[in-house]
Structure formats: structure tokens, C-alpha cells
Length: 383
Length: 204
Image (cartoon, rainbow over all chains, first blue to last red; front, side, top):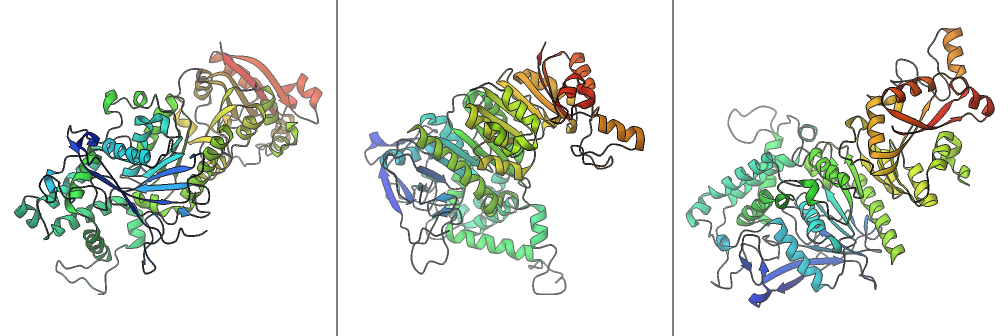
């Protein structure tokens, strides 16, 4: 299995002319819109081998390979994408784009508002999961891809994948929805609220009313990340990794400094996060997840909202994931079965919690690889 | 031709089931294992099939074959599936290990126009002889477990099954016994000489 090697990103900008603007669910328009994306592999002549990979909350368009010779870390799903890997770049043409509202190249709250010449910050319009999908669809048209062989995502990426099946039923051959849900649960909305509260009570955020420039609300963002990070793990995986291990010392210090390893781990995660992510983006994207309800237009009836999908589905959950629990996936599978849709479902036995979708590479990779092969085979046969 | 498949030499009941299924039909296989039967039916009979399976390693094997399968426990029921979605609902040698065999059979007859069930006949003469002469619960090639560790919690005979179908409003359309060595006698006295038996049933 190989690497895709050195890769570069592209920026596609549309809607410079207001008539081409992206219409958002909140009623506002976004223009212009830049979408950052990367591609791996080659689009075949019949254009039937394109796969859209959608990242999770804090992900970006850099899914595989390296940006330079000195780059130490590969893209976020490098283990899955490349020659002879599950997303086999010898066979498939892979596209990964950064979602709108993000801070990794695509238009978001930290982009320049053309009307003011300053950063949008809180002037940025509220965005939703269907808005993100609509923007990806514009990219799809720009790339002249008539139909995705597969749209795949984990967590928030999975929400978008499901949305694709509903909003563009004729443009997706198959969907892989991993560790995701059809609507965000009350518990997850609650966690998002606390995370945003930490940001919105950060002294820098308060002082600037969210319209910060160079001085950043890092403290609040780090707290939000630490909280969220706990929800990505499981009780079992934390016990296995840290237990009650103390850091450095043999004894308690009898004060409130870091004593336990798990404490310093969380602090580290929070610090790393503020280096690569923005607080206002965190507000906008978590809000988009809160609003996500696949069945909103069918009065909460999931079966009805999935009645017209035409894709084949791969749904995967992880046994110890309590943030996007297996029950969330089972609800999707049930609704698909009631509609007599073609669905594969596996609840992978794992102790890693929600993070399993990035860690259970072997089992998930096998499922994805075999599922893609059978979809690909069918498409080639019918071509 | 399908007798060349390994699954059919190991499992004569599957061979009988495969023969009974008409071309291009819609099939659900409950407890489909590694998906071999569905794979065969898809390739040889143009069947549109899907399965339900409990074990992860089996799911992975199904996906490898391109078989659509849902990871679930049959004891959770089939309530999400609409009436008569399938032409056939199959349950091969799994009936004995579900919680409520009667409820599952009724559900199968609801979602499938026809139901194909196979199970190991506990009335088989070798099983009877062991109980009669050794005074011990039978352990045979097709029932290799001890009484204390068997996953087969609802063992029954062919006659038991016929009585059950009658009492829950299911009609037996076909009954085919499997015992290669004692083919003729097992057709005459299935309850005594059939190792396994395949039933085709439907709602009355």
C-alpha cells in the first residue's frame, strides 16, 4: 500500500456575481464563495469513478498525502486513501473539500467580507448542513462530475453524506455514513452549547463581542475542545490509555495543578486545537450540527424523508460510541429497510468511542473497500 | 449444477432451499452467515437478496461477496419491514437458537410471501437411540453440543414443527426431508429418519 505522495490544494471561487451567490437556509446569500479542495487519483473517461470524501467538524480538505517534503504529518485519512488502500487511487478519483463556515481555506467567519473589507466574524450568515452540501454540489458541477460513485463521511461528514442522498438522489450511486446520525441528539446539542458558552465567555471574545482580530479567544476554544474531546473517547479507552496514572510525580501535589496524565493529555489536545482552528468557526459549525435534522421537512418522519433516495447505503457505527451511538445508525437503517432500500450495516466492535472512525482502520477499511468494489463493479457492468 | 458448491455438500438443506427459489425473486435470509447462499442465489438465479446477521466477522464476509447485510439480532424482530416485501424469507438451521421461534415464524410469514425454514430434526432415530439407551441428551454430527453449552435452546421434531405451524395459523405447502443415505425411508417416515427438513410455509 502506498501514499499519494506530495499533493496540492485548489481553490474554486464562485458567486462573485451576486446572481450566482449561494442561497442559504437562513434566507441570506453568500457571495463570493471559495471552496478549498484536494483530489487524488484520476477521473476516468466515463466519469464514473469519482468519490467525495467529507470531513468531520474540525477536519479539512487535506485528507491524504503531504504538502511538502518537510511536511511531518500526512492528511487526516491518509491510512484509508492511496494506491491499494480502501479508497484505492489506482481505481478511484477522490475529491475532498473543506466545508463552508470552516477555517481551512473555504469561505467562513474569518474570511474577508467584501462589503466591509474586514473579517466577517459574526456578520457571517448562519449555515446549515444542507448549505454545506449545496456548496459541494457547486464544486461537483465545476469539476464536471455527473454522479458520485460514493459520498462518504464520518460524524458531521456522515450527516452531509446522508443529506446528499436526499437532496441529490440522482447524483449519488452510493453513500457511506459512518458514526453519524439522522438528527443531532439532545445530549449532543447540550455539549455543543457548553462548548460555545466557553468560547463566548472568553475574555477576548467578550471584549470584542466576537469581532476579534489578531488577539484570539484561545482559552475558550481550548476548553470547548477539551470538553468535546472527552465525548470522542469512551470510558474504557480512557481507562486503558490513562487509568489513574500520575504525571511525573509519584504522589498527589495536593493543589489544583495537573496531577493526572489524563489532565495533561486534555490540555495538550486543547492547545494543539487552537493552533489550527478558529473559535467563531467552532460556533458556526457546531450550530450547523445542532440544526441538523434529516427529517425536518417530513415532520420528523425519517422513513418518509428517505423514501425517494436511490443510493445504495453502507452504514457503520461503533459499539462504544456514545456521542453518535449505534442506535442513531440503527434508526437510519430501520428507515431505509422500511423503504426497502439496499443497505449494508455493521456495528463494529470497538473500545475507542466516537474516535473509532479514525482508528479502526482495518475493519472499517475492509468494509469500505469491499463495499466500494461491489458498487463499482455494478456501475461498470451497467455502463 | 449447484451441487458443486461447497456450501451445498456440507448443508443439504441449503441445496433444497436453493432449488425451491424461483429466478429473479426477492429474498431475505435471516441469519445469513457468510452470505454464501445469497451470493449463489444472486449469481445463479438473478435473485435480489439481503440478509440479517449477528456476527461481525460474518458481516465482513458478506460485504466481501457484495451481499447486502444488516448487523442485527433476529430476536429484535422484523417490525420495520413492510408486509410481503419479499418473495421468500429464509431461515436455515437458526430456528432452534432464537428466543421466540413462534413469533419469528409469524413475522417471516408477514414479510415474505413464502417462508423457507430448515432445522435439525430432534426426532431423528440416532437422537432417540442415544436418549433411550444411554439415558443422555443426544450429541450427533449435526448436534455437536453438550446439553449445558448448546446455543440450540429450542430443539424440536418435525412433528412438533407441524403442530406449531398449525397452531399459529401457518400453512405448510411443502416438506422435504434430507438424508442422502436413507432417502426413501426418510421420505416415508421423516420424523424418524430425516436429519434435517425443509418446510415451505405461508400465511393461511
